Image (cartoon, rainbow, N blue to C red; front, side):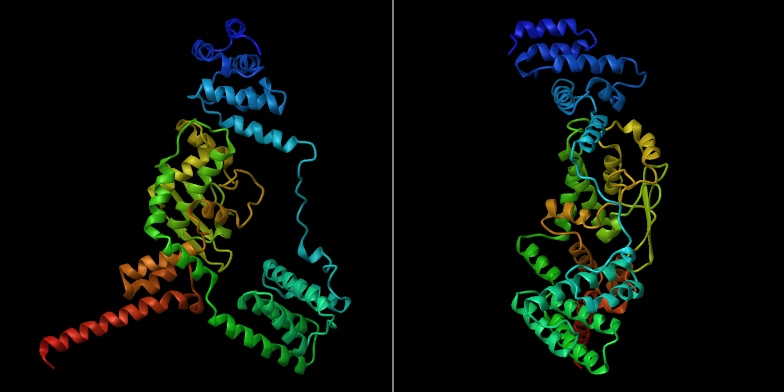
Length: 449
């Protein structure tokens, strides 16, 4: 370990390092990591060749100074400690590049269209003719994939029960009982039996078999309708902990207000924190489904206007309807700006917007963001996934104006299917009827009729 005198002597020789930084390092020589002075000198020498402001050095400076991942880590830690006013956002970009270069690093395979895949190995040979038909006749690939996964589970269970894989009423009955005994929810069992019925249809089963499986499916569909939804169970637990929609809104605003500038801009925890706050405020502002949130792109669905506000226009993956917000909340504007800048100075907003235009707003890349990623981020900070926020928002509207809340909720949540509105309509309709009856009673009381 070099002595403080040797450290100070080396600092005096590193002329590229600014005097203020050298002075700060001289006051704490014991905190200087081995090799930090050399890499810092190379960094500032590279920075001196750039005419742009030095509050946010370009990535090329990091690449020129650090030729290995540990050296880059030393540089970033040293700058964070002794030059806290400097934005290290481009250092985060350089660090991600090293992650991708790691030997044996995970490489994502190109997705293969479902139509080009073969049936799962556990499927009986007699089921194979139904595979291509399931894919071709499903409205979306996700629907076909759901059927395939459910049937894979059915095939495994039939094998465990040592039953022939012929779809009929008897096997549908035993499958339902077996899944129920395993503690699966009635909704899950309903989906499995429904997939089994779809298999029978694709295989051209006889009428008796189809009617028999449909009877078993109807039983589990009725049980699923009576069973409490997992969403409602989560909301009850959330309410028992004192959680409210307004509390989540306050939390989201507080998280957004906690954004700072340069500090820690190279750390993954800072990047994730910005995303958590932004996704939470967006989920509250728009009540969008997480699968939709993950697909939005800068300059396409999310557009920043000249006055600094953001607008949103997207097509719902579930309903296919276009949903638009001409102006999001001011808090949402600030959150989106913070994610866009990622710790860079505010003067770089327009430059950053142009650089990432057409890319996903969450990761600023062209690769697809997993559909459940936004919900995971919300759950980390709110102890509640993003989907129940839609129900909380509907409850707020119901309390404000029960009479008009049904139509307002349908418009806000982007619902056009009457069945989707049933759960949200029962409470406000009942509240409206109670209020109307109370007014009638009051009128009777006053008139003496």
